[in-house]
Image (cartoon, one colour):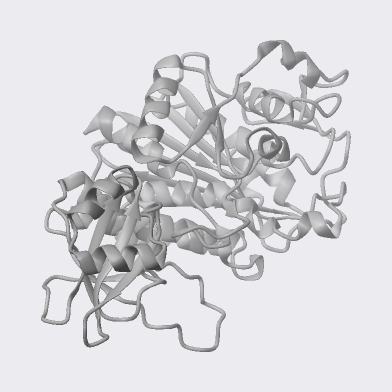
Length: 459
C-alpha cells in the first residue's frame, strides 16, 4: 500500500508549505504576526521532516508547515501521509520537475505499509494533489519498484519460497512482455548450474534459476543478478534460533533484482536486460550439502564447502558465470551476503565493491544525486589467499573471521571476467527501526542509485 494522489484541488484542499531548515529564520520574519506567534509557541524549527499544523480562526486546519533539508529531497515529504489527518493536500511551493517528482515519490512511499496479514482495515490515508511538474510515470514506477522489493522481503518464507518467487517473476514478465525461463530441480544439473542445485536440493520446494530477458537485442546488454535464498537455516552448519529470525529476508537480493528490472521496463530504458535470480531454500535434510564437500561450479572452478551457511556466494557464482558468458556491458548484483558488511558500514549503507573505476565513480555520483547512500569497499587482492583450499580451487569461506565482506566479494569476483565491468552490493535489505517512509521491515538499498546510473549512461 502507498499513499494516493488526485489530479485537481478542491475548496477543502489544504496547502503544505515546505521550508528549508537553512532559511527558516528569514522565512519566519516575512510571515504574518499570527504565524510567527504560532511557530514560536509550537516549537517548530523547520527541522527536516518536522510538521506543524496551523489552524484557522474557526479551529479548522488551514495550513501545514513542513521542514525540509532541501526542496529536492524525497524523504522529508515521506513524513506527511501518516502524520496528517485524512483529506486533500497540495504542496504550496514553486518546484522544478526534479523536486516535484522527488516530493511526490516521498509522499507515495510515506504511505507504505505491509498489512497483508492484518485482519482489520487500515486507516485511510490523506491524498496529495499531483505537483504541477511531477513526472507521474516515474513516481509510479519508482514507488512501485520499491514497494515490490519491500513486499517480497516482508512476505514470510511459507508464502515466498523458490516457487512463489519464480511466480512473481513470471507476473513481472507478463506485465512487461519479457521472456521468463525458469530452470527447476534436477534440470539445473543438466543445464550446468550445480552449485544452485547443491544448495537448494534439501528443500521440498526445489531450487530454481529465474532468467528474465527484455529489450531489443541491439541495445547495450545489462545483466542483474540477485541472491534469492528464500530462507536460510544455515544448512548442516545450522544457525542458532536468533540467527534465523530474519532469514525470510535472505532473498532480498533477488527482490532487488526484480524491483530494478520492473523499473527499467516500466520506464523503457533502452537496454537489453537480463535478470538472473537463483531461488533456493538452504534447508536441512539427508541430501543436504556437507562441510568439506567439493562441488564443480558452472565455470569449472571447484569449490570446497568450508561452511554450509556461506551458501549465498554458492548460488550467486553460477548465476554470475552465466551472466558473464554473454559479455554484457556490465553486471550488477545484489545480495544479503555477509554480516561482516553490516559490521563495516552498518545497516543504512550498502557496501559496494566494483572492479571498474568508471562504473564505481558513476555509481557513487548517482548515489549522492538521489540520496541513496552506498560506501565502496576494496577488492583487496592480498586477501584472496585466505580462500585457498588444499583440495579444491577455492574454499567458500576464508580462514579466520576478518575482512569477511571483502573475501566474499573476492570469491564472487572469481566468476566474472576481468574485462566485464561488475558491481556487487552487499546489502542489509531491512530497516531495524522506523524512519519517515521507511518502516521496520524489508527495504530497497541502492536500487535508486543503480537506476540513476543506468539512466545517465543509456537514456
